[in-house]
Image: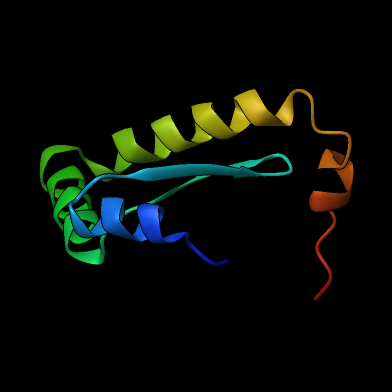
Length: 76
């Protein structure tokens, strides 16, 4: 992935840059800010709450995912 100069400037200034690639929505954020946010989440929410939030969010995406069944097959 390559950022444009204006996107790079926004990230340098601490702004998030949102983008979509096919069906994946992503955010580019300066690493130091990401680490701060991650630390805040770890400090303020118990692991069970984070797990529940992640599960609920993923469930929303799973509803319309035509490939979901293929994800459920694990090869070892």
